Image: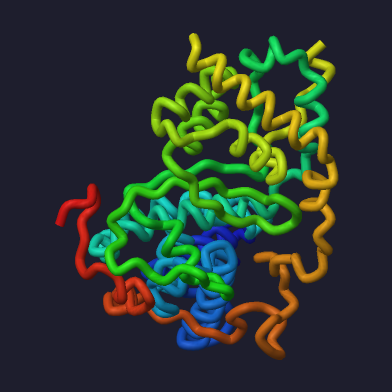
Length: 259
Length: 87
């Protein structure tokens, strides 16, 4: 009696992910033919993982090289069941996978590079929600500015790392205006943003990072600005805030809730 | 709270400066959107050649240990490092 279709499909799925799984009878014909067929399926699956992850993390791919990246993508795909049809969401756990991958331990900044690239990838696909603009802020009673709470725009992400991942990222851009750091040991702070259509990165000084970080955690504006100033007295709201507005870092307030 | 007042005053001044000059703020949004699309991971159309889907007819080989050896630009930086910034 032939194997039930559901069982055959289960076995096929398992064989795709596990090279040691039994493959006998998965395809008609001699066993060598079956082995060849399943190898093609596995190869295509791994290539799709590699393409999807390489699309999200091109700098990491350049950092580790094609062979290593392809091997990482295959290992990640095998270990992380992806239950969505959208390959753009495949890499949600890739940064922590890379950070904990033993063979890459001599390059401990790679996980944070992947984290930065994943934030850029998510920023690219983030909802195009309305932005907070100067006229909305100017309409607010100055007495209420101090207690104002702002929300980051969906395309905005703050990151910090003990490694110079901003320099590393910029050094790999086509119009590279920074070179690879000779020593990547430097604390970096940055914002991933999408000012118009393109997701990009801007390095932040410690004060500006502290203020934005406080705002993103829900601190009122007065408190956030003070945290920025306490971190670095050079932090100046009169220049920082116009920059934030021009870059569209914040979402427009939900007026129905404000009233 | 002098510090807080000073910071809020600076914030209000910054907001007023941008609000008074909306052209400054609006310029950013008018960038032409040509060529901004990023190749999607789901696109089957090939960017590299004749095959529609990535890796077609590419048979799987079991991963070899040497493939996990990083050989790209990371080898140009800092040698062997350890997390936490101490070597």
